Structure formats: structure tokens, C-alpha cells
Image (tube, rainbow, N blue to C red; front, side, top):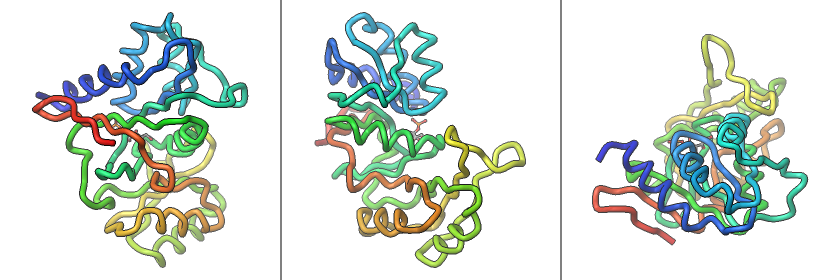
Length: 222
Ligand code: 5RP
């Protein structure tokens, strides 16, 4: 199976976690896009969606799915999103698509995080994928120095020759060369750096369920 076929398989499996008549939180990225396209097939059975990025909101609306502002929503039964890396216990690195802040916010208002990922995302230890950190632009250099002092090598994410700007008007710093032994502790440490908006470690609140696409079928890790 190709990676896209695995992504489609987990996106289809995730539909079973969508609660009819309720609001669903929707992630960002290529796997989430497969999920949005599947969700469109049952759009009349859900109340609405909350999007974790402008790109996701546009794709949902393109399918005729109502997108609510999170401020209008108290709670959602489920948030469904991909990951860049995930451990068997549900700790993740996210933010490859630069949507980590809104992803973490929408996930925090959801009762359950269902991660959908192809098998290549499952790791024993997080850190091979560069860890994204969203940063207030004026703190870019001070945060890079602070991240370098903790571990790894921090680099500003570029796009088309310029610093990539997030949906929130901030920049992304990616930390390479990490071996993350204690994801919750590193999440706390990076959260404490002044100027950091969000770190792409989802460990203090990780995934409750991971639907993993493998050649043998979709495996459910809880
Ligand atoms: C976006 C994310 C994505 O969930 C993550 O990058 C995985 O993306 P994909 O499904 O395209 O591999 O965190 O910020």
C-alpha cells in the first residue's frame, strides 16, 4: 500500500469516532485532509466542525460543512488529527504543517484526541522529526538561544526565502537533533521560555487513541 492509501484507510476508520449530532474538532495536514473528505460524506449527521487552521476551515467549508469559531463551543466529544511522530503511549510531535497552536487549543477543548497516522509515524522515542515551536516574532533570536541551550539545534522555518508566518502571525523555529527521553518534562521546559507561544510536543495531553495505518490493516493503539 502507498502512504496515501494508508492515510485514507485511517481517515475512513476515524469516521467511527465521530459522534452523530455533535461538533467535531478537525486537524490539519495531508492525513486530516483525507479525513475531511470522508467527513463530507456524512456531513448531514454532524452539527458542525471546529477547524485547527485556515486551510482546514477552507476545506471544510468547500465541502459545505459549517465551521464554528471555538469561542462558540464549550466542549467537543472528539478531535481528529494527524501527527509527525507518535509513541505507543500517545505522546506526539506535531506542527509539521505549522498549525500546532490552534491544534493544541482545539484538542484541549475536546474530550478525546484520536490521532490518525500512517505506520511510519510510530516511533520508540520522539525527536528524529525536528520539533516545531511557534514563537512571537520579536522573540525569535532570544528563543533560538534558549532552545539551543536546552538541546538540539534551533532554526527558523523558511518558506519561499522568507520566514514562514503562521495563521496567528508568528514564526516557527524547528529544533533538530533531539532525543526526547521525557516528553512531558521537555514540553514544560519549552513552555517556560518567554516568547514561546506553543511547543509541538503533545505529551501532557497526548492522543487517547491512535489509528495506525499498516500493511496488515488499521491498528488501534490506546
Ligand atoms: C500540522 C500537523 C500535522 O498533523 C502533521 O504535520 C502531520 O501531517 P501529515 O498528515 O501531512 O503527515 O501537526 O501542523
